[in-house]
Each structure stands twice: as C-alpha cells, then as structure tokens.
Length: 270
Image (cartoon, rainbow, N blue to C red; front, side, top):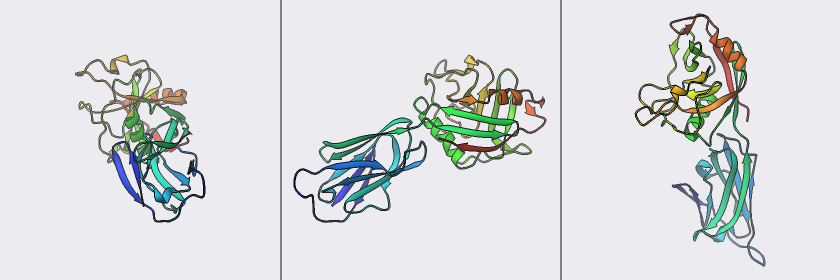
C-alpha cells in the first residue's frame, strides 16, 4: 500500500505498511492539525480513516512547501509535514488517485508579524504574503535563522529611507544565507511612508537580506515599467514609526549613522 503526497508540481511517494479495512458502511476520513499552523513554520497534519492502508490516496495543499511524510504515521493515521507559505485560509485535501475529493479541511493561519527590538526602541512589523509571497518568506527565513540579530540600520537618508539588515558593528558585511530572490513588482503595494521594501542592486532580481523603511511617500520607487521595475514592498511598520523617525534623526556621515543603531533581536510573534 502506498500514499501519494502532492504539493503543486512536487510529489513524494509515501509508503505505509498495514492490513485490514473498515468495519461496515463506507469509509470515513478526517484531517486534523497536530498544532495550529503558523506562517513560515513546519506544520503537521494527520489523516485518519478506516481503510487508509488499502487505497491509493493523495494529500494535497497549495499553501505549503516541502510536503513529506512525518514521523508517527501508522496503519490508521497518516501524518504529513510541510512549511506553511500562506496566511488566512490553508486548505488540505484528501483525494483518490482519480482526483475524487474524499475530505477537505480549511485551517486559519494568522497574518505573520515580527517584533524587531532596536537600540532605539521596539518595532512591530506586519506583512503581505498574498502580495509578495517569495519576498515575505525570504524575510522570515532570515528572521527565524536569527540573522538580523546584531545587524545595523546602516544607511539613513532623512526624508527618504532608513535601511538595515546587511552589516554588523564596525560596518562589517554579513554574508547572506540565501540566494537572491525574484523581484515581486508590481504587486499592488506602494512605497508609502511606513512600508517595508527590499533593498537591491541595479539588478532587479538581487535582493537578499537588506530591507528599508520608507520615511515618506516615495512613489518614485514603485514599478514604472519593465526598464524601471522599482522596489518590492512586502510589509509595514504596524507599531513603532516614532522609533523609525528617531533612527532617521541620528546624525550621519555619508548616510552612515555616527552612533550605531543596532537590531538587537528580531523574532516572529505570529
């Protein structure tokens, strides 16, 4: 007996040994989450049913990546794990090999947020994974790896932006841990005051860890054309713009703060 687990165009064959079947009537199935799903975190779903071990079945969801069989599966319960990539509604389906939906279950994923403690105060950040999915997931990979802890807001341009996430004390460059991501513009978001966007080089698909916060409405940073693709907005300062304004007020030399402004800790809170 085998179970097929499908995620988008990714498939993984899952083998589970067992024998026997349901007692009387048609088979029934249930999908549960072993813990409430959280954006960018691994989630484990359990599928139970009376004849799991006698049918070719498919577990599918478009809201996760890296779907695989999880430890703890038995002949009566199939457990699968994946990394949540959506906020809002996450649907998990159990289908036959012919595509018949046997059971479908929706789970609510809270909108992702981050608390970023700086040497000048606390920032609470909210994000738009529906508008900039790859960008938000990339940012959270850095947050959850602890990458931003100890990095600086290293560039301050009053009336324009404050930028951080790429250097440590002494303006030492911190090596990136992921490959550059594709530029997600236009995405319906604009570089208005208080929004977060990804910094990049002149190459559109070059953003890695560095981000900036807009100090004013910088509409000139938005997508204009294929030759002027702009900068991808992916989040917003939910609380703490007074802290951002305090960072913008730090005296600078060639846009570098004379007194270091440190991100002491960045942590996902939901």
